[in-house]
Length: 478
Image (cartoon, rainbow, N blue to C red; front, side, top):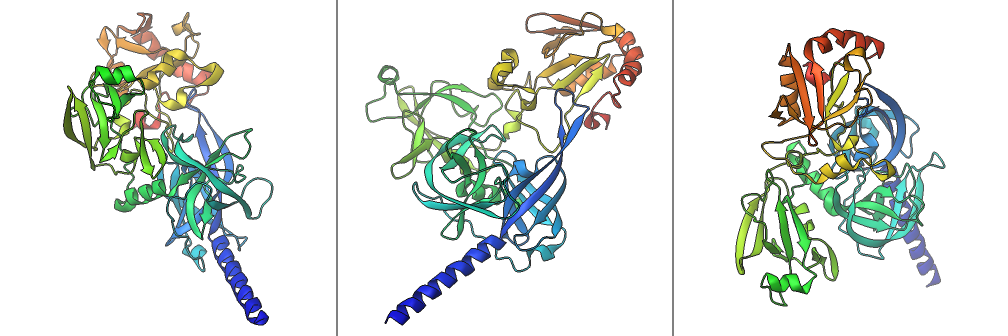
C-alpha cells in the first residue's frame, strides 16, 4: 500500500515538473532598441535599449506589453532553453491597453513550445506565479503571491483607466509583459508596479487581453469604445430628491457630453444613468461585475468592441427612458489634447525660429513642473470649431524674433483675427502666406507678430545655426 502511495506521489510530482517545464519554455525574453522622440525638441531623439518578457500564446505569437516594444527600431527574442536570439517584429499593438503581439522572422523559434492558454478572471486571494526576466540576473525568474484586489486603475503607458489586478508577488523592471500563471493558465500580464511600495504590482487582466485579441481578429486595432460624457455621483441624498429619485433608484448624473463623442445626440445634460446594458449603476459610479465585487461603471462599456451598441436606462424629467448608443467614434477624435503618441515621430513646424506643434499628452508635464494653463486642457473636448490645440513650444533666438526668445508653451487661438480650428488648417495658412504679417493671439489676447518676408529670409540661417536638418516633420514634408 505504501509503495502504491509513493508511486502515486512520484507520478504527480513528475507530472507537475513536466508541466512546469512546458510553461517555462513558453516564457520569452524580449530585447528592444528604440528611438525615443523628444516632444519639446521634436527634431531630435535618443536611442535606448531595454528588455522585457513575454509568453507564447498561439501559433507563432508572443504576448507582451506595448511599452516593452514601443517606438522600437530593432527587436530580438530569446527562449528559456536556447541561448540564440531571434529577430522579431510587432504584429499588433494596443497602446491603450498596454498589450502587443510579437512574432519572429524564423518560425523555428516556436518549435517544441506549447502555447499557454488564457484563463478566466481570477478571484482575490487566488495564488499566482509571475514569470519573466527581471533585473538581478539573466535567467528566468519566478515569484509567487496572491491576487490582492481587482478594480479600475490607471494604466501608466496610456494614462487610461481600465480593470487591473493588484498582486503582491515581487515585480521588478524586466518583468513587464511576462505572464501571471494560475492553474497552468495566464490570468494576467505584468504591467506596472508602484515605486517604494511593499510589493504592489498590477496586471492587465484576461478580460482585457481577450478584448485585445478579439479586436485584432480583423487585422487592425480599433481600441476600446467610450460613451464620452462626464458624470457626478449621487451619494448626496439631497441631489437624489431634487431629481425625483426614490430610495431604491441609484445611478450617476450626466454633467457634460463631448460634442464629437458617441453619446452626443442620445444623452442629455441632467440625465441620470440607471443601467448600462442591464447592469445596475450605483450612486458611487460603480457596477457589480461579480457577486459582491464592484468596479467603475465604465467596465460595462470596456468589454464592448468599437462599432457595438450599448443600451442605457436613463432617468430623464422624472421618467424612465431607454436609449441605444452606437459606439463608433474613436477616442482620438473627441479630445482637444490627443492622447500619448507612440511608434511615430512628433509633428512640428519651425517658422522664423518659432517652433509649432499640435498639443499631445507627451508634451505635458505633471508634478512640480506642471504648467496649469496646459494641464487644464486635458479635460477639454474637441469641437467642429476647434479640433485640436496648436502650441508654440519655444523660440530659436534670432534677430528676426528679438524680444520673444523667452516665450514657450504659448497657445494661439487666433491667426490674423481668424479662429484656429486645427493644426492642419494653421499649418496650411502659415505656409501659403508669402507677405505681410502673421499675427497670433492667445486666450489672454497676448500677440506674437511675425514679419513673413523676414521670417522666410532668415529660415535657412536659423536651421544652420541650430544644426537642424528640416524645418518640419516628415509627415508635413510629404
